[in-house]
Amino acid sequence: MDVFYADDVEYYRFGKNGGYDGTIEFAELPEELETAIFGEVLDGDGVLFEKTEAKPVAIALFFEFQGDAFAIRRCMPKVYLSKQKIEGKATEKPTVETNTLGVQARPNRAGYVQAKTTSQTSAEKYANWYSAVPTFVAPTGG
View 1: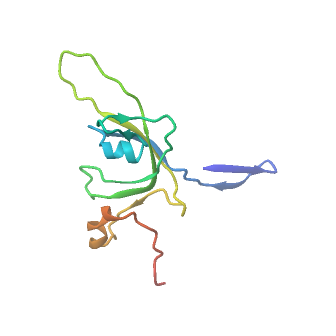
View 2: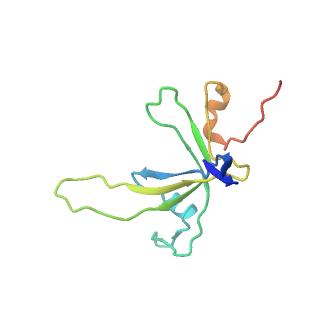
View 3: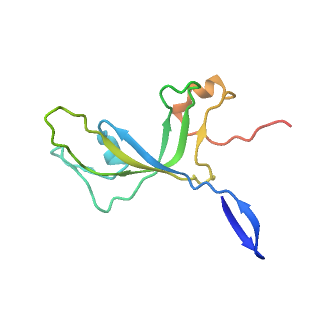
């Protein structure tokens, strides 16, 4: 919440939703993600090159949490991913190293940050959730 003060009183209070920040973890980043999202370049010898001047590309991020009793599906229509770090560990035991990316979900042009299914979502819409980015449809009737 933001507050605007005037004449020594709280004159107006308003909410704002600038989005979400977090991380997402992959066992291994697909090459398609590295080239399409991060602007990396694959040469003729199969070597992937990371460019310093690559521009960020927004994607739509669809997901649901395993174990969610209601199986809510979500879509964040404007998400920027960023590489976090490269690190390794010296160890005698085998370990699984993952790739962690920063996630910044921001409002799209229509001002929406997220869409999610509810108990009122039609079976058809739920089944086809991952096929297209959802757009806002105003309720009909009175």
